[in-house]
Length: 97
Image (cartoon, rainbow, N blue to C red; front, top):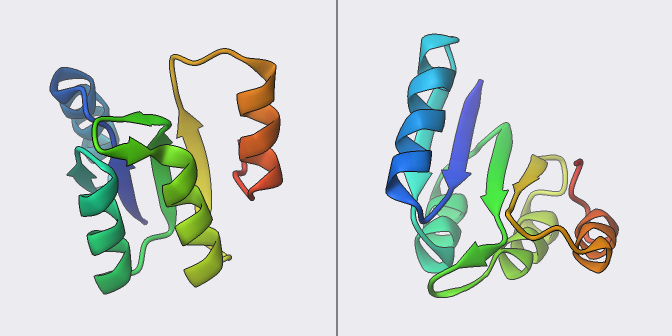
């Protein structure tokens, strides 16, 4: 299974990648919105692990891009944001959890 991790905090991204790699997943990591969209336009992924707060844009915009280009790709949101509105908006845009 091939995953794309969109996370700007380097240490957290390394920890997640290391753990999932040991579990047998193929994982690529990008730190922001523009690089995520670039990867998504050139490669197929089974799942995207998506941070909402990115240094160069919104994770919600990445989610909208994913669902417009590859609606069957699973998306799991990773975020320190805890607002109910953000959770609802993410699910409405097509996030799986």
